Amino acid sequence: MTMKKPINIGIVGTSFMGRAHSNAFRQVSQFFDLPYRPVLKAACARSAEGVRAFAEQWGYESTETDWRALVARPDIDLIDIAAPNNVHHDIAIAAAEAGKMVMCEKPLGRNAAESLEMTQAVERAGVRNMVWYNYRRVPAVTLAKQLVDEGKLGRIFHYRAKFLQDWTMSRDLPQGGTGLWRLDASVAGSGVTGDLLAHCIDTAMWINGPIAEVTAVTETFIKERKHQLTGEVAPVTIDDASLFLARFANGSLATFEATRYARGHKALYTLELNGQDASVAWDLHDLHRLQYFDHRDEGRVRGWRSVHISDGDHPYMKHWWVPGLQIGYEHSFTHQAADFLGALDSATPASPTFREAMATDLVTDAVLASARSRQWQSVAG
Ligand code: SOE
Image 1 (cartoon, protein in one colour):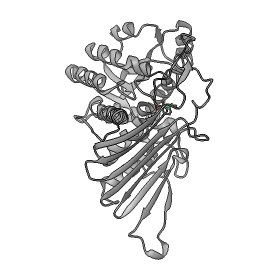
Image 2 (tube, protein in one colour; image 1 turned 30 degrees about the horizontal axis):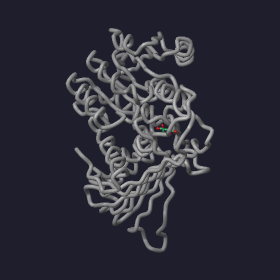
Image 3 (cartoon, protein in one colour; image 1 turned 180 degrees about the vertical axis):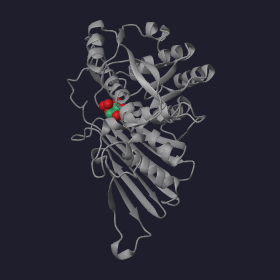
Image 4 (cartoon, protein in one colour; image 1 turned 135 degrees about the horizontal axis):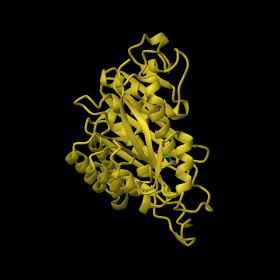
């Protein structure tokens, strides 16, 4: 057991991601032997009452209602941004300029221009930084990456990803405001492109390398909704569905689809790679399994294997229970916190850094541009 140095965390945001990140910071030192130990120093949100209740629930020592006050505190080492997308940019840049490490919920910016400024700020300040693309750290997904890196699949021909939901289908659902900011493009940046496809693109490029060009179609099925903050009926500015074809730099072809209008699907993130020698497939609703097909198997017993990712030699699993006992969604965040803290003393920072995550925003920008122009679009970068 190493002596753990404290890292004082100041978190901005106390909703879904505030809880997911806080849970990761609370769990990580118990399950991973790391040189650093996160200390839940301060939580920040606009409602004084709300943030006090959150701090009490999760064990934060203090609260703030203005993120600028949090960033100015000398006792904070790391600012964790778990607030809506429209504040990522200003908080990250101020935190970097104050010399703090910065962790930011995905997507990094509302567009690649914001992401670039954020990236330049952390790089100028020389502070460690990372974006929470948690699905990379689902052990089955990490294993898929390992198998591809080891060449087990051979040359990759196809990548296929979907992220399907149905929670915005009701016409009566208002847009904007608490809990519904993902329906307001001025806050979110875009609809499912930045919210859901961003996950698919991050994982895809991590496993299969850069995306060179895309051709996309988007749709907004419900054109007007009441705005929760103003009460006015206003045009809907997000994309409800976004589908695109892509060509990777390695020559493989891909299809990507994300929608909030797939009745019956709540968060069905699926991915599949088909290579010369083998294929892998994964499904978030069955996240502890990796489907694997190896054409080199003896013909008589060749077939898809459903590998239960719960053994000590599977990624991350030796840190948890005993073989056969599986873990879930929240652990992907704990793994990300472990990787971040574990890499602090190493020359190679944990991935994705802001610069690596900006690559995803360059693709989502290209997807939206292609949907507008109805033309193939090269990915800048
Ligand atoms: C949207 O419903 C959402 O919560 C995304 O914002 C998350 O990033 C995704 O992991 C699950 O779906």
